[in-house]
Amino acid sequence: MASINYKSTGRRKRSIARVSLVPGKGNITVNDRDIDTYFPRETLRMIIRQPLQLTGTNAKYDVVASVNGGGLSGQAGALRHGIARALVASDADMKTKLKKEGLLTRDPREVERKKYGQAGARSRFQFSKR
Image: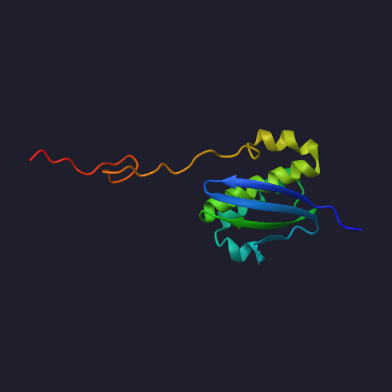
């Protein structure tokens, strides 16, 4: 018999994470690599583990994820979003706790595009009267 696994998608900035929760010991694998080698900063690893710690399911599930697009910070946020959604798929009672912490909400902030004739999105080239 196949083991039960819960799949979901998480997004943040330009990153997309496809997450599978599989019953296990709490190992997190990202793009076929261990979380410690893929995300070098402890803060990013802390962000990713947040929904698991909040619901107390650290040692209950293994997380297998495929992440692409964006940088490491966006990927960590997308992974957190995906894990939170997968936890809700596994147990609907977790929804209130995760929603209260804001982990189920997709962060809509994106980088504003650079405009032509300007130095950046908001900054301008220095004005010279003469």
